[in-house]
Image (cartoon, rainbow, N blue to C red; front, side):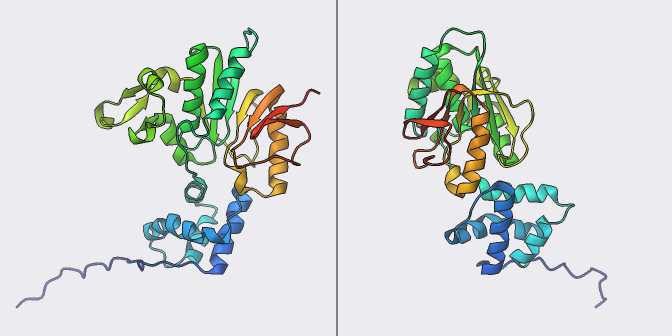
Length: 286
């Protein structure tokens, strides 16, 4: 029998099915995500870190989280660092979450004096787009699709790419009132058939941008009538909240409004805001 010249097949890297993270490794990622995004990970978030980052260890054939930490701290690996940020900062969201806020928004815009100045809203942690599209539906249903603007930002480039497409399953749209669903959502076509899509008129009214709330903000951000920053500050410590809220207040027009999540309180955080109702704050007159 003649010998063959076929090379030995390469051994495929196999990561153990139960990957663990040591306390030391977890603290490294906890400190890094706090530095980059201001988010405080409690000890109870170990399982989240493991579940969300294990796929990246597999992707690179790494044996442990220490090696992955070294990778994302390599100056040449900025894209992977952004990937890590995306995976650890993405939060649950859905259409018409905390719907009283959108009722308040509709009343606010209806009572607004006639003006040629567009009504401006900032969805400051927009995730995969459900919040800014809910805002857009609420505004369009009251004042049509002109004379308002929405800026929607997030630290995660991955969720922003999803948001810009405006594509969702029917299940994700269950909380949209049927009249608004009929008016502002269409069946997707082509390769996206089977999905539902926010119609062009609304999608074109939203300016999606990548922005780190704790970093430098573009000079063209401008002033806003309403800023939504909901269910994000629960992950921040008090000094981070104080600094961020002060900056947000600076971006509000006189007597503009800041809306937070129902589980978040700004009591003792900023003297320039007065509470109108739980999670709804108004900038004080100068």
